[in-house]
Image 1: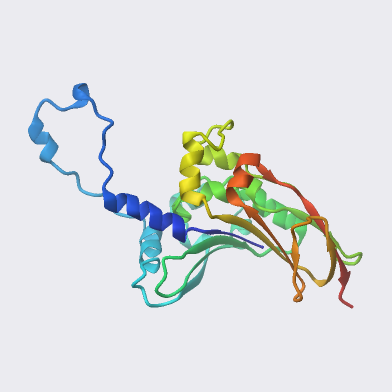
Image 2: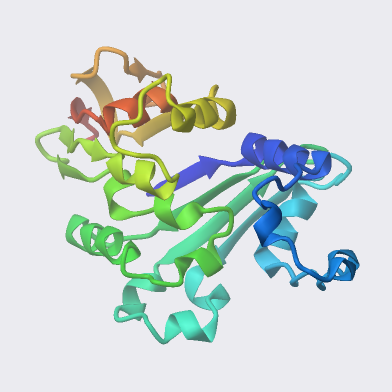
Length: 254
């Protein structure tokens, strides 16, 4: 299973904000230092995270090489994060996938989970929330979006030919983005969300092990190569707080 996020558009927008140099108008007269010469002093810029440097490089439109790599989490985690891990056996089965086409600002980043059975997959998803230092491994605010509440969980009977997906809870994402639970489309918080994610989608792609017969989601697209694709408007999902579950029925391969 892979849970991934398309970050290219958001990163381009954030870089645009930085290039514009938004003035800091949060200070009032009482906050100003008595010695005005202090205003001319500049503090040294903190070194950037290595993963952040990679992201900035591969999303540079002048970067002429395609970037597509898989990095196992246990290999890139800082020692301080590893010290907090209780189930390293599960972490070793997870990898960070980063992909960016050549000469493009696009970037897709996700978590790949190679599991032996459904019980182990559920353990891996639950364990993601306990990785306290995940923000050091997944830059760009990815850790909150990768919590167990936003990764699809399912049951399946491959002999009888059905796969049932649970509803997916996205309410925690509001808190991660600093939004209140009662945010509406006209609020300042939602206005910022619309600017950042206005055209974003949430897409579920299921590779079915057999000929698809039906799907209870009426908007599902059933392809000739045994896939079911369901796409949601990101902002609609945030407003509703969840994605409804669905069931796929299929004819198993002999």
